[in-house]
Length: 184
Image (cartoon, rainbow, N blue to C red; front, side):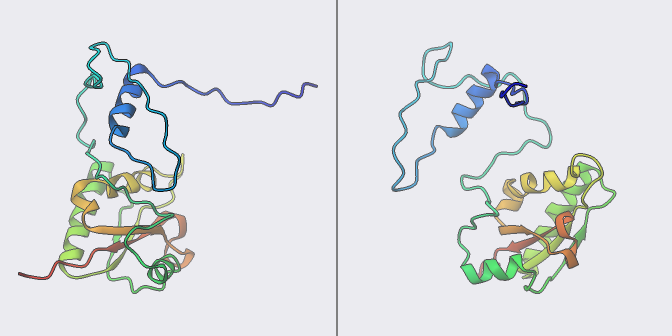
């Protein structure tokens, strides 16, 4: 027997994917205390240092990402106690949205309307049920974090977390909504 371990085939990114990655990471700065990375010289056909435009136009569901993405493992702008209460399912749930049986487009539109309405009503914690899915872990379940990054929703959500078993477990998510701005 050989000591070589089986490693799955890893696909290398295409030039277009590398150009998109470089363009997306152009303004990223390291956190304080992290060592400074060495600058990467971009090789572009035009030689002007900018990434070439993508060869395709984004589809209907492609959205721009905000500068600071949601990170369910390290919430920004939330105290530790509130984060623990949310993760443990101890915050009062002020609205439930069930996405079962919807297409991706229907689910995204329903989520956008639901989050907007609940925030305007002053709700803080809502539950979104995506289901676990049968194959590949569920399409809606995997799409929810991406949808939360869209501008229409990202500005309204502080953080999200997987729900406890009594609220749907891996097939549901708690969303903590931002407080409504005070009327002027």
